[in-house]
Figure 1: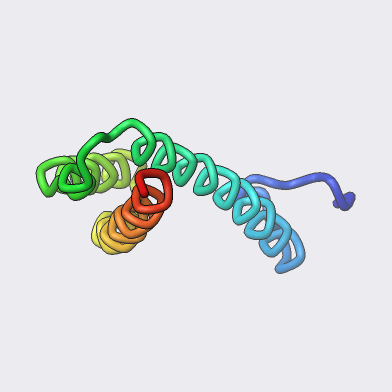
Figure 2: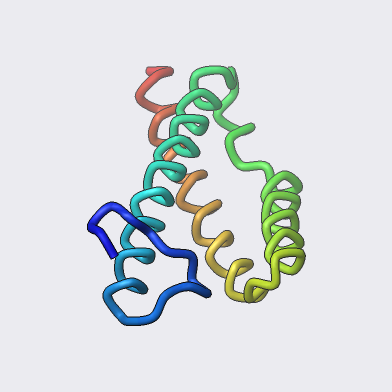
Length: 104
């Protein structure tokens, strides 16, 4: 395996292959999370009222969507649900902080 070749999980034959795949996936996930938090920045900029930052109905929908997608993909849905709970709460906290910075 070359340094730039990332194998699919089913084609990994040793731990170096697995680790390379995990590391590449982590880099991609961080990039996607950075993009997600940029959307939280946009929400903070767009929302006129701080009280609209927390939206429990939207939170529940986002978590349910992630859980359903995990189920569709055969990933551990309960684990994804837990991760998304933390992600959404972190996103809300980030949006509150950005809202406060932008609307002083």
